[in-house]
Length: 111
Image 1 (cartoon, helix red, strand yellow):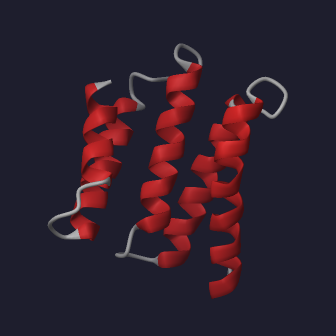
Image 2 (tube, one colour; image 1 turned 90 degrees about the vertical axis):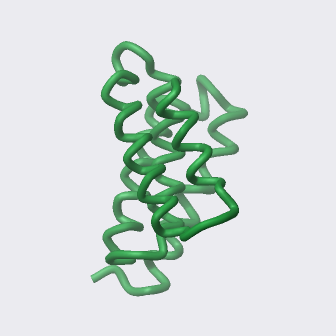
């Protein structure tokens, strides 16, 4: 939980270098996902996947296409837990993240 919360803090940090802050957030979310497994903590895992996807989608450094592909993978993982049937409220909150990432990837040309 601490790693996930630290990731949130870095992802939302209004000061410093945004790229560096997001890379720190990514490392924190990935650390959280070593404990928050889909099997043992499905909703926490899905939440960390969503936040990891958001960090990748907003990452201004590196390969933009690859960052968006990673974001899409994370958002798709999130929606495997937060399904429309089982969690309609969360599904409606998280589904647009996937659509925006797919649209962004299409806009730059998924090659």
